Length: 104
Image 1 (cartoon, rainbow, N blue to C red):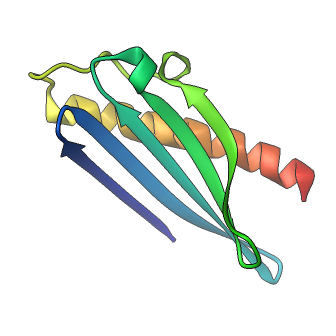
Image 2: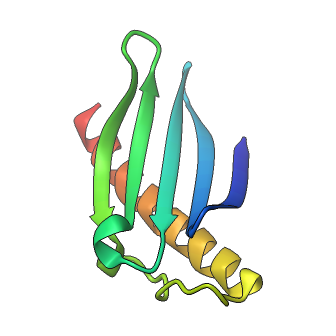
């Protein structure tokens, strides 16, 4: 199961993707979040994994410069933002899945 959403709050674009990955009798849930605004130092990407015993814990953080998202502006094309966000969320998911599966 995968859910995606994109929204604008004040001057920032936010993207979120939640992916549930079944593996044997366990289901791993990943949540990728990106905040993008006009300031690189206030923009970031993060991946968390859900554990039934301890809740959400962070497994990966990326600076915005490490992701393929163009600089934000007040006149950004919404379709371009959606494409950039989706591509970046998938990149972070692939990285986090590799990291997390190596530790479990």
